[in-house]
Length: 261
Ligand SMILES: NC(=O)c1ccc[n+]([C@@H]2O[C@H](COP(=O)([O-])OP(=O)(O)OC[C@H]3O[C@@H](n4cnc5c(N)ncnc54)[C@H](OP(=O)(O)O)[C@@H]3O)[C@@H](O)[C@H]2O)c1
Image (tube, rainbow, N blue to C red; front, side, top):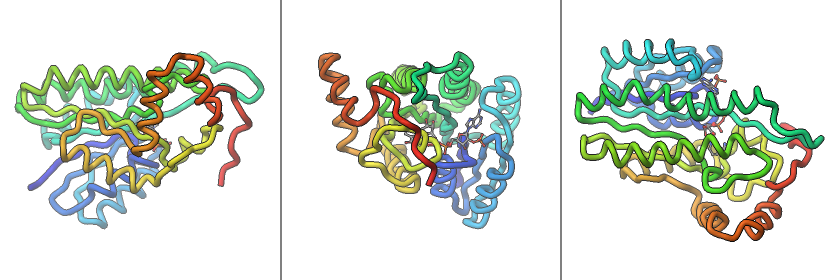
C-alpha cells in the first residue's frame, strides 16, 4: 500500500535513520531539515532504496513557511504519518554559567513550537479524512527535569503532555497519536551530553524500535527497557533521592563537554 511519510530533522541522526528505515518502493517521503547538503545526501540514499522523495530545506521554527509548505504538500499528497523529530539541546556550561536566554528560546522554539508548527496544520486535514498518524519525538528526559539541561527537559515534558492529550482527543476520530521517548541514541545531539550515556543504542536500532511502536500504535514508545524503568523510578522517588541517582550519572552538575570522536 502506498504511504506518504513526513519526517522533520531528516538531515541527520535519528531523523535520517527513520527516513532510511521507511525508504522503499511505494513510499513517498517528505523530508525536512535546514542543512540542504546533508538533506540532499539523505534524499539520494532514500531514492536509491526505491522511495519517492520530496525534500524541503526549511526551519521548523518558521511557522508561516512551514504551514504553507505542509498545506501545499498535503493537498497534493495526503500525509499518512507525520514524525515531528527535529530537535536541539543546550546545557549548563562546565564554567558554571546557566543557559543563555537565547539558547533557551532556541530549544523551546525548535523542540516545542517546532513540533506544534509541524503537526498543528495537519490535525484538521487528517480530521477531515478521518485517518492519519501523528508522532512526536520527546525523550526519557521528559520524565524528570535534569539540572544540567533544564530547557531541553522542559521542552520534552511539554511535548509529551501535548501528545498524550492529542491522543485522547483524536482517537475517536480515527487519528493515531504517539509520543516517542528514546533514551540515549548515538547522534551529534547526544554527543553534547556531558554525563555518561548508559544503554546507548544506534540511530538505526532506535528507528527500528520507533517504527515497531508506531505500527502497534503504542501511546508512549519508550526505550531501551532498563533506562525507561530507571527514569520512571527516578520520577517517583523523593526529590533528594532522585537527585542522588541523577548525580551518579553526571546529570546534576556540568562536567567538561565530551570530545567529539
Ligand atoms: N540522541 C539522543 O540521545 C536523543 C534522545 C532522546 C530524544 N532525542 C530526540 O531525537 C530527535 C532527533 O535528535 P538527534 O539525536 O537525531 O539529533 P541530531 O543528530 O542533532 O539531529 C537533529 C536534526 O534536527 C534538525 N533540526 C534542528 N533544528 C531544526 C530546525 N529549526 N528546523 C528543521 N530541522 C532542524 C537537524 O537538521 P538541520 O541542522 O539540517 O536543520 C537534524 O536533522 C530530537 O528531537 C532529540 O531531542 C534524541
